[in-house]
Image (cartoon, one colour):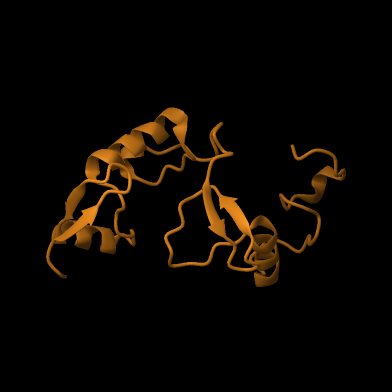
Length: 138
């Protein structure tokens, strides 16, 4: 792998070194190149662990558990849908190596790809047809 890289933190604007050892570690695990320096990454993890993010478990430092959306679920990243070109907001930071869709295009893609857990088709979100009614979401 190449030598050390000098990157600029997207949070604090300081330059930091992405060492060749860190590059290997990130590549082995399929992680993208970091956008934040280590102190800012740690601060973001601490914020998420205290309920300030989208949860998710994922890293070994979380101690498992977690997941789902927090009370700040209305915040997100503004993107342009790869399907229809409309401006939308997604609850994650896109990595740039995959297309990002608005809710409607995502549902159309998901339905067309056959990746669902059953045939229900067109009954709305959730995929569980036992409820019968179409009232509220929950």
